[in-house]
Image (tube, rainbow, N blue to C red):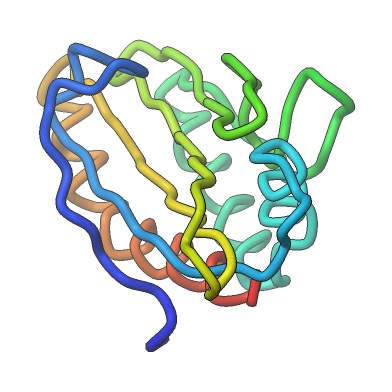
Length: 156
């Protein structure tokens, strides 16, 4: 996915100051008039079938531990993808929720990229509360990276 790049990130981050795990991916988009909320809806609104199947498997597994499930889709204003909307500005939308094992935020930032268009960056922030949260992130990280990169590449 050559059009998606990894960007450096330092913690703490305003969206989740207690985060102890994070990553950030970015790409250039030609959606010149789209707000961050528009791009979030576009990005999470049409996940490929394999992502929906992975999410369904994840939901079955985490239900055994009493953790929150997540469903892909768009609910006007309340959720985007499987994630509740935490805050919205034209240039940024923050999604996420808190659970027993971890708190997380997904931050979509939109900024000018000169004549190329605009840069869309997706930052994932995680505050792991305990050993289970650390194990969960360890297991999920390869899938997370693939999903974020794929979803950004599909925005092109």
